[in-house]
Length: 303
Image (tube, rainbow, N blue to C red):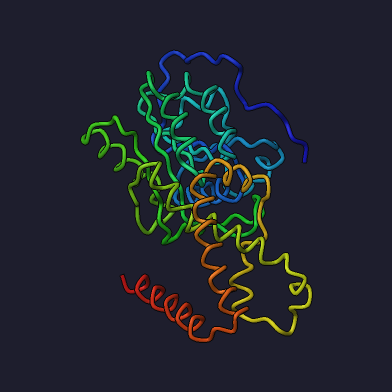
């Protein structure tokens, strides 16, 4: 595949005369695992899907299955919903160029795994325009990446975290959220969780990012090379997300470095407690640590 630096937009696009969106027409920027799965789900649900991707060959492939046309300067003003599904900074850069030609009344969402940085910039870009930006994060995915691994049922039953603009009044917020849930209905999200960008990043550092760091570090043990015949569910569960897109996760980890570092501090402190008990052959202390972890897991599951 040949990469191109062209975003499908001129540096200074102008607003077409009489521009208005076509109801149900959805534009997707980025056809990786998440963006491509949105395209497939929405296409199966009857939406008209337009797409842009850094590599045009991916768009060409997607047109066989789920994309109706290119997302470009001419078609952007016709989209009722635009999904930004690239790396966080690429989404911001793309939106900054497209902002003047997005149709009044349209909704733009991102689907990145961090919210503070991207929401701050995108909310600022949206100011002064008559379209709305809403931060989103679908809590779904796989350890694989790329369009080849996309699925129309990727989001079926999964939560979608939604970060609406803080300065929006209750009536407008309700209207936007109702339209958004209607447009995304084919994706089959199990619930919509309203959050601030700050709270999202604080929680996601534990529920997602820490798990990826631990899994990625765990497989660096020399013992991992001889696991065959000695491993079962525990090994499989703990190593599932060790395989990852290093460039993407680097950006996400560093964007959320403060909260992720705190979670790592907590984990390292607790691991040291287990290590000390084992090294000292302190059965009473080790049993107490294990029992405490078991109790907390049960409490969490039953909450």
